[in-house]
Image (cartoon, rainbow over all chains, first blue to last red; front, side):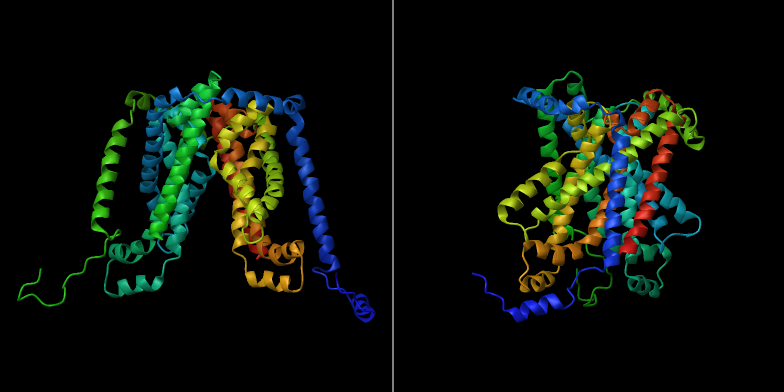
Length: 278
Length: 270
């Protein structure tokens, strides 16, 4: 039983001003903001669904059931065919990450405010490289590179590398900008040259971050390299594309399972390594 | 090595190795080297094909220097329109769904069964690439931006709900306790103690996700899920590198604009 309130206390509560989280004006502004967002959402929704064929959408549950029933049981005999693509996928991710490191490290040093030779001219160029590399997905890079250097693992490696430059360089230059300046000063006070300052004061400070970023990106690259084959750049995606083209859903299931396992293992490895470093 | 004549203190200094245990260090180095040799050996490169392709590469670079916006402008416009609207709607829908899931996946405010279910949803959404989900959704819902919208919304849930849940778990407990001490119920704790603490970050993450969704919308078109990716794919298939370059430049510009403006919004929120 809740205690019965006495008359006096209830009077006190109702008579005084009631505490509110926001002022009336703030509340109005908030509601207007939500209203604008809702209106904008509906506006975008209208444009997006202009060409949607709703019959297909209503039919989707049946389709889903149909595909689901085709996907089981998985065709386990197909698994041996996937081992070579799996090796390729891992090679694409690993070699792509390494290739990216070679290009990203100089870019990062050129982009960091405290190590760049010129903030006026070189830094913007480095930042442009970073943004361009980051805004184009590895699949699009692969699409371009397959057209240029031909289908295969090589295109995948270069695609992964190009996509990773921006990611690695961005995180790395932020790490360089955050280094402890007193250590640099201490080393330079010993009469060290520019290169020695770099070697003994800057690099040791960013090395853990660098290793962490590398492993993190490698993990992402494993994820991305599993699907690069969809546009012809080698690895598991190639088999996925082949199986999808002939609607071999039991094979698709196997590939999905393998991709899932690969991704989970790589995530586990990267988490372990980063834990050991940091 | 110290001999009788050598000074008792070391005269040279060498920096400590990155990995302290020697056996682990050497095993890792050797293993890495071995793997590298095997991996590089397994990469088959058709150098003739690369040589032939360099000409195309050159044409592509020319395309970048002289992008052709005009001849495919109509298609680019439709693709961009689809990509942008897809990005906005999927972000809004994704955020709307991921907020309850994120709250449910925070151990400090959700009971164990709810926590387990929400974490399972997040794991499911995070473990597959957007493009794979897009393939499935295109097969179910037909070609076009609607499948793309569903894909991106689904991907948004995994991303946002996970980060939101982690954020809620990291909140300042004393504020929640203070509100709880007034006799507040669960809803009141969420609105008065948790929401104000996580809101700025939630908005920042939503903007970041909008940016990601736009970038992804350019990709999932390759498998038929609408957006500018389909236009790009067509341009590439037809060797119209100048049009493809124009699309890529537009994507880069929009992503840059989004990054700058979201940076400002985040600064303004704090």
